[in-house]
Image (cartoon, rainbow over all chains, first blue to last red; front, side, top):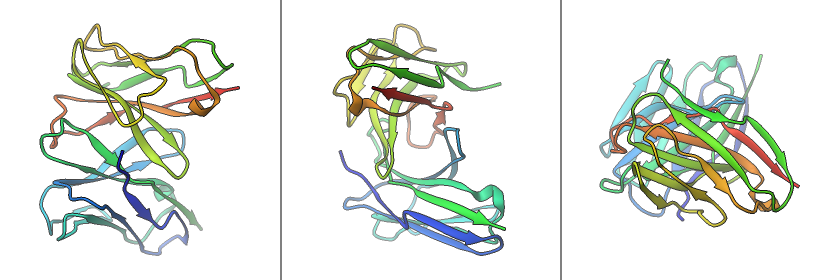
Length: 112
Length: 114
């Protein structure tokens, strides 16, 4: 099955820094989703994007649905220690009965 | 509290010994799914179910079975586990499986096959 490529694979940043990560696909999606996985837990939905070009925020998080529909970006501003975890993008096509294709994940570590 | 519950959280077994990982949701969701998570590969879908008695293969179904006899339960069965099935497994559910619905995940089952 198809996979989405996320970059970077991992990041080590200092508290207060901004973070950017992206997700690219060889095919288009109608929906892009961003999930966060805390250590020892399942992924939790952060942001959902439904239209090309859409920019959506959730607190310090901002995500964008790429114009080509083949990519998406997530930014975290002013990182804090609880931002630690693995961030996954996921793409979905209309009519595919909730079949999500997940990215490979970006592991974020925040140091004080 | 609305949740997806998986059991066990951790399981160590030996090659060939049949095992079942249970998944239950209390949200009356029709859609349920199993994923496995491996380093560098993200989450890959194993099987999914749109409703009772309706199941279908995901991207990596080989070596797994599922059943959906009741709406709330969706067990994952490994008839003859092998070491390459060592992984972190997640069950998930949503109301109907439509694209604008939130997918709820369980806390995961870490399986080691020796």
